[in-house]
Image (tube, rainbow, N blue to C red):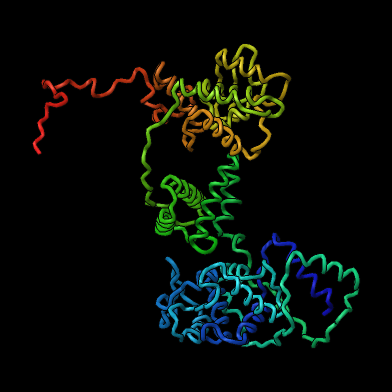
Length: 535
């Protein structure tokens, strides 16, 4: 093989780590295991050939990562039944994997796969370095896309991949020096190829190798995500086009996040066939143990149950969910700003430095805060309003396309708000409140800038104190002046129960406590000093 043919695959692997996943072929897997079986030396007193052969066999059979396998104790493997327990899952190993583990496990260490280097903790730099030597001896690429993850994903896609291999084959292992691919070596390689385009320098005479048969060259597995019954593929091909056609990308991201966490819990891409009440309940308990809030766990539950029910309606699964418990979420009292606190926010906003899309920030921010205060709109809806939505007589028309409730609304703005908006309209523009960043619709940088305004105002600036607190402030003011039904129409809610979660009872002037309505008992009460010290 010429030097050019040796260098180019390494350069391609080093420069392109975003290529689509290509599983190992049958011939490549057989060469890999032949190289592992003939590794020299020992690992923690165990013959290196047996150790590496067993590790790679179990990884291909179970799809577990190297870190998970190195953390397994001897007690988690039953040699009588060939059962391997990892976390909450038990794997029935293939007879070939059982044979490889039995040939290796007779040692005195507590771990099933003892590894004396790397301080026993990830990241396993020396483990990866030694595995690159295994790949190099088998004449296989050893750049980043071809390390443990490729073997792991190959095993997850087809559980019986190990049974299709001939593990008795032998190879002539490469013995020349291992070259580690680094980005800083690209210029040296490019200069070498420019000086010797033919690649004839230091040509080595190699033994002729017979061509691989079609059976050896054929790919034996496919990508797990593209399985016809993959839950992720069902979401992308069926559920999202049908149920989330008009939803935002943020909503689709919630479903993808739930699928990512479920795949991490299962150790592989979940399929429609594996959906069960027991699986989801153990998954939710795992999320709770990982420190997730109850509301976050319930959000993941809602996404997965929606996918499951839609698959049942499409007759892709035999049963629908029955009883997946929902975690209890504490109900907090809504908090709103007082008029004095809103005044502090406006004064701090009027001191904002710089410009926003050519508009002085000292005029842009008060106009935005007053608009949110008058209308109670969500920040995402306000940021999508156009200048044409504000009429000359002071009406702000909010189209249904930017509203969460899919309904048009019209608000008559206060003269103070109209004067603040007019101060920003030096010249015609498309958007009422232009903002140069946050094109994804989450407005993270906008919330960060508003948080700085709250800090300058000397007010609390936590997660519950951002733009939505102005919406609760507007709802509380309307409910105090009129009633909850008027506040419901003002916010565009579907029911009064939803609006009640926006009204701060401590800010209602007409609020009457229960202690005032209850008839007081005939008792004079006690004054300070009336109680004698009995100690």
